[in-house]
Image (spheres, rainbow, N blue to C red):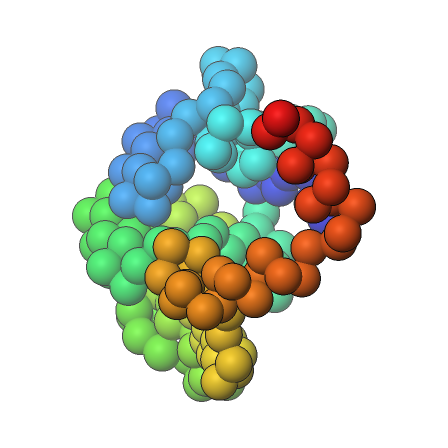
Amino acid sequence: MLHHVSVGVRDVASAAEFYDAVLGALGYKRTAQYLPYAIAYGEGISEFWIQLPHDRDAPSPGNGAHVGFSARSRDAVHRFHKAALAGGGTDDGAPGPRPDYGPDYYGAFVRDPFGNKVEATLHVVAKKKAAPRTKARAKPAARRSVKAKAKTKSRRSPAKSVKRKAKRR
């Protein structure tokens, strides 16, 4: 649904140090850079941008807004949180389950050095159970009994049998 998300920062180079570590912990990489104005991250395409505000005023984080990044494991959520704190971010919710967001939601919240709220989340969706197997299953052709093979031969149409006999002659 979304093409990309951007957050405003006052210094793209210092924000890049923070996001290189934080998003690197989740397996994301830089996908574009237009220094000193903007840098993008993603998985092949530029999905998350850090940039100077277009009006050149001071950036300010949106009240209630945050960006959630997908994590591939709980360990990745923890690495994200640790990298954020080491890079000058502040804790806004330690790694752990978030039952208010659903029974399988696991995440961590931080504020980047510019006040933007970012999150790493692992949302495991339970796998559906396989449909039960039916009792009657056809045997593979190689394992069929001699009687079963004979029945199969007798089921062939007479026209096909006549054609086969003609070819043999």
